[in-house]
Length: 402
Image 1 (spheres, rainbow, N blue to C red):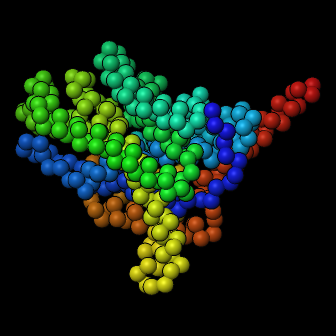
Image 2 (cartoon, rainbow, N blue to C red; image 1 turned 90 degrees about the vertical axis):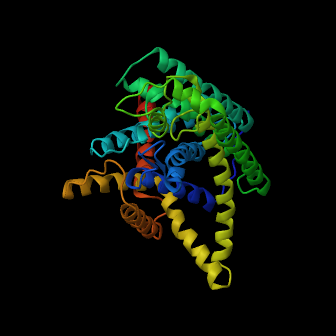
Image 3 (tube, rainbow, N blue to C red; image 1 turned 135 degrees about the vertical axis):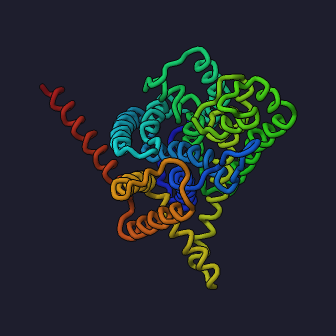
């Protein structure tokens, strides 16, 4: 077990850029164009949007793991205090998630899943980086298989615990590898060029295994074998049915055959999806950390082009520095627009809608960051966590004196 580094770390602009990309991907999924539209054969794939639909939720989970290091205890012997803040934070996130769900938008609010993931990390919080990476790797392989076998044997529709752990949109069995990997990576020296290079190499290798290898398997008989076993409905042929399942984005694989585990379907929790998304997270984080450094240099350098690049990136970064506030704001905005106009946001939206949401949130986050270091909900969450913890300690101290 490695002791936490007691030295404070400077904020890395690349981490905020990483979260900002995740936010944009979230907007694509909620208020943007479709990744796939039905048609003859496999239908029409829109790769410029499909790129975001699976990878960005994984980035959110990875970023959640990164953020857990912010509340990590500072001393080697100070183990227990990290547990209480984590439980309080998880409870507050769950309440926030439930409140946003009550707004009635079509968004599957991820915050309740965040709270579950945070609680599940508690047994692993004191592990070293290498051990955490091993646990994440084992979970990435075992989780999809256990999920497949459990869902094939048991059907508990609507059960909240079952959905949170096994069968929901963001079940812990297939999403915890991202959180644990993020927890491990967040403990690395991300300012180190060597660490960033290793992240890039590892990410590229995982992408090759998750996406390239699985695509080769699909082209060499796996697709045909899956289609041979499909049950056809609503007049669809086998290719159309395969495509509909492939792009279902339900969070879990189909249980018709174990071969779905090697299919790189977006947001499916298959081996290919989990391993490939882990690779995207590692590679993209490495690249954005470099870009963040370049932005700080360009912002102070001579030349209009360099300064423009630096300013553009530092304007984008605040979007990722207040992810919780931005996430809640876009759901509230959707609910208000629905109440005012009747627009439901169900199904795909236009590029204009995506651009309007992106520009509005970008402007609001940039303006807020000019006066405050934390987003409004981040501040409220921090204040509430500290207040509850202080109150609990006072009550406990009073009880012990009596």
